[in-house]
Image (tube, rainbow, N blue to C red; front, side, top):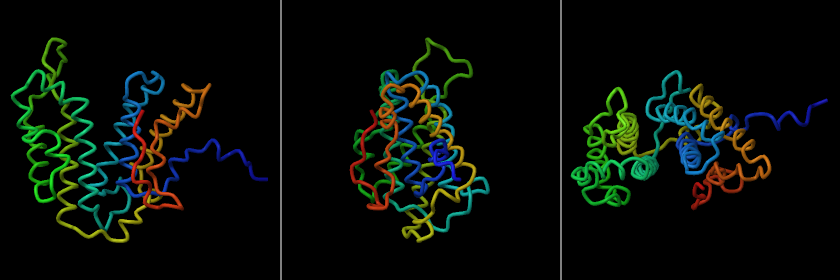
Length: 246
């Protein structure tokens, strides 16, 4: 007889059906939610693993190597590529750049010639140029010393520039290849290889940690995941206005 309870202990993230860009944004939401102030330390301890898995998974969006599953024959649309970069811009601005500008106020105009909105609301004809300038500014920023100095000025993490370059490469590819094949549209998680498996496990760790931390009110674990932003049988495209991270 089938054990009807077995599925309650399976990692359901491993069975999600969504495109790689959609799942990458799903992971972005969870990372931001876990990194928010006042999050229980048990949940917060899962952040490093999630960020690492998310970074590897995003790398697969650009170069589908053997470790990233079957090579994708199409590419993300220009708008999807821009949306991914825009999410990164907003997160980097809040977490790092505003603090960085306090110590290096003269550099703000280099990153934001027309404020942050000049990037996040840039017209299509100017997006690639502005995102390229922004990425190069990150790459040219002073690098943190090998040994952290508590008295030193706030410097930007080296990984920030690398992530921007990865997203820029993906965006450049999308602007060159403006069509998106049906293969890419149906490029589901089921066949996406080790990088997805690692991300699914990292998401599961956040989920189980959240259930423990909120064991007296387990429904609170939902706030760390944008499930509404995933495709569903009724509305495959998902809602237009997904919830914000708590």
